[in-house]
Length: 200
Image (cartoon, rainbow, N blue to C red; front, side, top):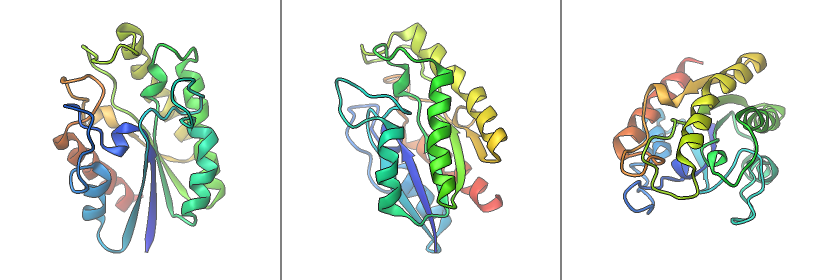
């Protein structure tokens, strides 16, 4: 059985753009992916709201993706694939770092997974859209930040020989809040990932 570790933020956890409650197992992209891949695969969910690529959040503890990944890695190893989709929360106004620094942090996470013998799929999250429902995002900066991630993540993936998916090429975040993904988009994302994993 092949294991796929999915490491992400609230769009991997499955936050609904309507009310931030969690979408059910059959609706989240991780659950859809499990159904698409079948019983010979095991999809491991590690989505956490407010998780950053690699930066501490003074308001929400234990959300530094790079710092907490070693524990997650030890929990689930061995795994054949690591999927990383992070970067949305890095666009919040309280973080001073740049998209390039977010890409560096994601690269560090991928390297830790690769050191365990896993293949890596790096996903650039879908860009934010206006209007954004949450005041912790400065709208203009946040949208610009999120749009800058895909080319940087692609550069990292190509340099490392990893797989890459620009989620913004197959889905969009909801107009309801400008941040989270609706049920239909979860399905489309899972379909794109399943196709990539099968053909890699």
